[in-house]
Length: 318
Image 1 (cartoon, rainbow, N blue to C red):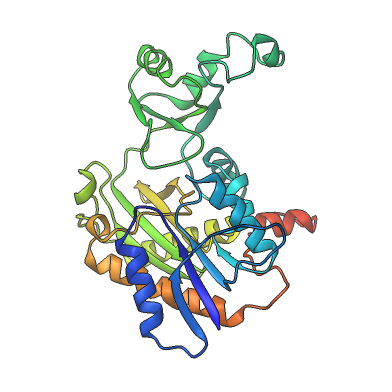
Image 2 (tube, rainbow, N blue to C red; image 1 turned 90 degrees about the vertical axis):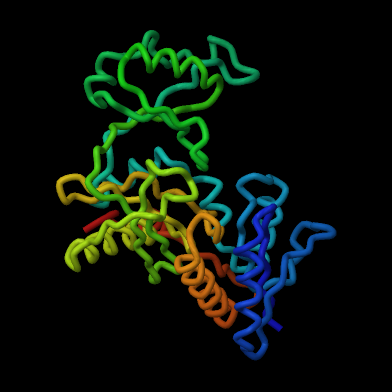
């Protein structure tokens, strides 16, 4: 029996619907259930062919469990090793090398010293930094947000240098990015599953959370294809099996705004019934594909083109 497990926290609608949909397909030799962990022993298999991870970003114990499971042959969606290494600033840096438009972005050292460090720990950091150069490059208005993580936590819209210093003082030990604001004409949030299934959803980030998918943007077929190509390119290079990419269109150009979302929102109350039905059906289909492809005692993870091309010493893009 090839078991598909779902690892989740307080989220309910997606995990429950996903498990129900996998099992309702009645694929011989495949079944889905919530992951159950009563002990984790080094080098011992998890008992799952596939684990769909929805929570390890918040629970380090789960991330360690998933790495051990992957080492023993489990297909983990998403790859826990890459997820641990990845962050939003690197995403933007990579995008500049694979012909994906992104806002101008800089990374900033934390306002407060990290725990167990002192001023001597930063011998190589200029003080003060070249704030004039940074602000001239980014411009205002701008956004400041953590270089890692998500959920719209600690995100600031800034209109001046004075406001930047005021708000940066609130960020304590967080490492922040300062990013050009893209004044968009249209905005889309795009699911990508398995590096091949894409759903492009009109999205209005200025609306309250529960109304953000209530938007009437309507891309032309040519623009839709352009966005789809960008979404697939990003996810192929990052190697995520399940991700969302947010695209802001300015003067017809799709700028990738946020595309490191390996546990993207899939709650029916926020994404709406139609989008929810699509993501449940598509995720179930893909998980079953991976379960049927699963081979014992080999690496069954997805690795992105960045890792594969870099390891092979190949040209990154074109």
